[in-house]
Length: 450
Length: 112
Image 1 (tube, chains in turn brown, green):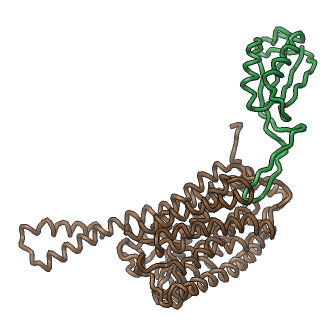
Image 2 (cartoon, each protein chain N blue to C red):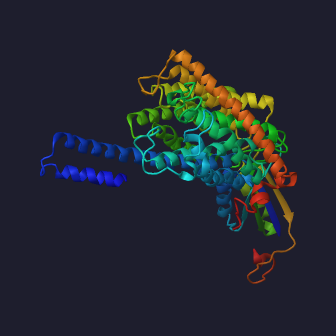
Image 3 (cartoon, rainbow over the protein chains, first blue to last red):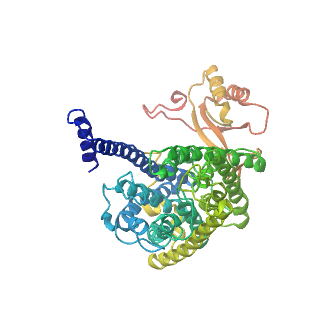
């Protein structure tokens, strides 16, 4: 359809000098040509962004996480991310997209787009008027893929594979779909801009992705319980090299996540891109400074953790704030997440193994609040501050609070149902000691004799 | 016939190899090992969690020589591997029953 339009516009333009066109017709043809050109540019960027966000899950997050576990769990940990690329993709296409973005109630969307019905080349003008509806759908799909993958950091090295699958599917229905619909969906409770009640600003998923996953991760860490031997036995990361590569891929992929959320190849995308980048940089610096002060050494793991913390924090506001505000997000996220991960977690003793809560939960909540204070209508015309920045802070806090409540309740229920259905969330002690790779998958990550 | 087993600092391996080459000792077996004697380990910190690492990476060098050359070889290793600090390693000397070259079943000194 799109191609046909462009073709028709080109024909009309070509015909213009010969057949004397009336001025209104010529203007109409020009407008069509301009719209087609914009659509082509926007579509190219959003498709690229979708691919970048997929790259964040695999290999980005898979590498980041697998390097932090012991080598007997390297494949099992990578699989926890990778399997989301398969399962969540199918779930999203079948029903997830519809429950989030189809018109429905204030809590959940309807079934108009189930099985991708009515999702095609014609743009969905409610959300993204310049790109094919399919592009919007597949871009949003990548967020639904990475979200449950982020949670897996909380129960790394001990969750059964079938329990992981059941939990992740239930979690999507109980937490992700409702919160995403409430914040982003037409008529969603937290989406006053599209007919809802509370005007929450969430540019790229600070609340939808990072608060829900981070808080759910904490619930998982507490319900599933610590790894056997934690914290007495040493459980060092087996390869920070892999984590390093993963973190760098996350940083790059985050441009798709945040700048892609402009939903067009626009100046807003440039603004969100720069904001995001500054936050990552400031996050890395902040964590290293805190670490130097706390431990006397700036570590590589600290640098990459700080960058990810800065990125998670800035996600909520990337396209709503002045680009230099990204530095604020990064510094705040870097320091706060460092404190949670290094001081608070070790004080309470819960085993959020890879710090999904400490980084994504804390960064997400902080980013939600900072966005209330820093949102600026000069950057994005959709920023409307009916009661000023302080009023917006209230709306952001309400959105975060609702996200937290849904995540806690939804995760708890999902875990209880999962435990009942699969006969327990955890590997049995022998399998846990042997490692996920052999016990679950019957393979080893490193076959040095091969 | 003697077997000499030397545990040395990894960064001293090249110097020791050169020193042995200089006195015409060419065969040896090297492995990367971990261990500790009096040397204390170090602390590693990952996201604020501290790990005391007691077993420190070392290189183990094994060579078999004619008994008469034993002292000469030991002196060469001592000179090359010594820094004078704790952690330089140890040398162990064994009496060896026999040596056999698998290719042609030569035995004893001829197999070295």
